[in-house]
Amino acid sequence: MSLWPLVLGTIAGCYLLKLAGYFVPSRVLDHPQVRRLVELVPVALLAALVVVEALADGRHIDWNGARMAGFAAGAVAVWRRAPFIVVVVVAGLVAALLRLA
Amino acid sequence: MTAAPAERRAVVRDSLSVGAAVGAYGFAFGAASVSAGLSVLQTCLLSLLAFTGGTQFAVVSVVAGGGGTGAALGSGLLLGARNMLYAMRLAPLLHVRGLRRFVAALGTIDESTAMAVARDDDDLARVAFWWTFIGVFTFWNLSTLLGAVAGSLIDPQTIGLDAVVPAAFLAFLAPRLRAGAVEKRVAVGGASIAAVLIPLTPPGVPVLASCAALLLAGRMR
Image (cartoon, rainbow over all chains, first blue to last red; front, side, top):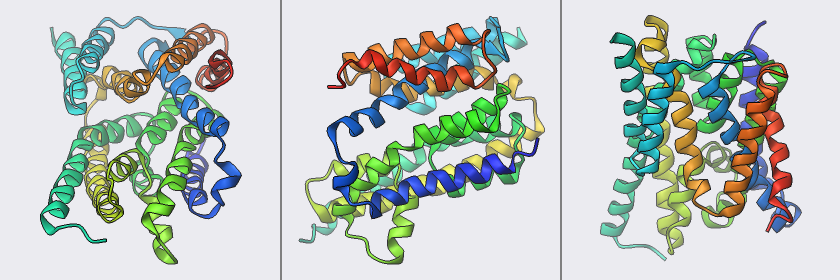
């Protein structure tokens, strides 16, 4: 499957969404309910992405020890409000070192 | 209303340092994208033209998991819809006209919006928006390229990329979780839906279906 339709669709869609905010009169979209919906949808999606990325291998649940440990270390960094770069480095380093061991 | 030069310089400095901070994330995106099967060119085009980190990450994550174009695009655009609200918020602050609107639209992302709306002064808000855009755009695209090249040279598992990606999504989610109880409920709901559906549905569906957790938000207040 070519990935070009997806790449071009993502580019067009993301840009048009941004642009729409400058052209659509704000009274059309600026309802508290719409605002809340758009705020909450990413919360559900991001939580799902965390679970899928941490646990799934296709349609299987895959408990990979090194990945789990790296993710857990990254999660602690997030909880401690570490800067983004620390989260990324800690998660990667822990998983990488465990694989070397 | 024009702000003092010293104030403007401070805002420019802060804005550029926000840009530098996204570098690590861009590197992870570049590596994740090529390991999902996108080419270096496709990866770099996403960063240049879609230019919205969370959405780009979600799209390549669904592809990496074996999800179809529809599921990947659906998840990405649902995440990208927040940029439209940012644009509505920024439009009266930026006073952009003509062609500049099309450039401002590209730069309408989490970071530039947060930096702009944090100012009480419209002039400083504009400085913050444009310089955060410039900083993030520069670092995001350079680090995407580096990550994509690195990811195509070495096995991303050896640098622990598979642990970095879920941690990155968690870092993205965390400030939203701290916003309130409804957010926490929706997050737990979304995560549970995804976990249950992983073995039951085609890849990509668990992510999209997590939106049903919004029903847990009650009357959305």
